[in-house]
Image (cartoon, rainbow, N blue to C red; front, side):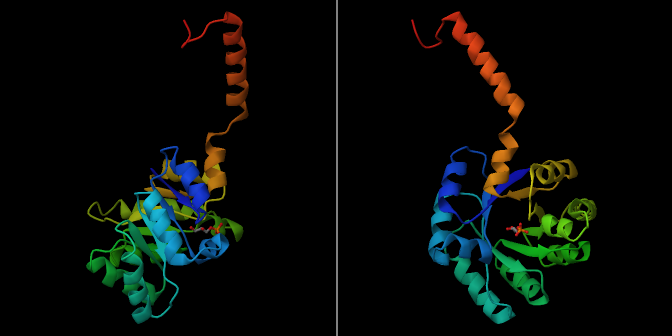
Length: 220
Ligand code: G3P
């Protein structure tokens, strides 16, 4: 499963990209606003740091303007994936951009029916928001299971399930269990994935015992 980082914070992206574990980045208007940066500039900077797909979302809601904005975003760098909302104008924009060879990430997906349409529109990615479904008492991962099950019926389908609105490590692990292609993970959650108190405790014990040997691997 691919790990994308869900942020527009360039310092976080640089820090986590250095681990070698980051396959891409997703942004959205809220994350861009939070960054305090000029949209086109920060997208260009992110694309230079992370060679994988970098999602940049249109702001318009009508097809004509979405298409023009999408083409402007796609021109920033070859690894830009244009993000459009799962609306009828978003789907029309997805079809037009995909037909032109532009990678599109169809976002704000909350049902299997919507995910079917994203695939028909030629999306490279569909982003079901699992955390926001959990917020209203549903089980967001059930939607992932549903979409993966449907897409698996059509091996020629190229749309990848990109699990979004990830709130904790359980979402990431369950996404992998279900066979999702990508999870886009907030930096804090990615760090939770590798932190475990028993690892820390075990390593401390190993280092204490090693120190008592008085040996050095690199020394004489
Ligand atoms: O990629 C979508 C993600 O940023 C939304 O997350 O926590 O606002 O539902 P959240």
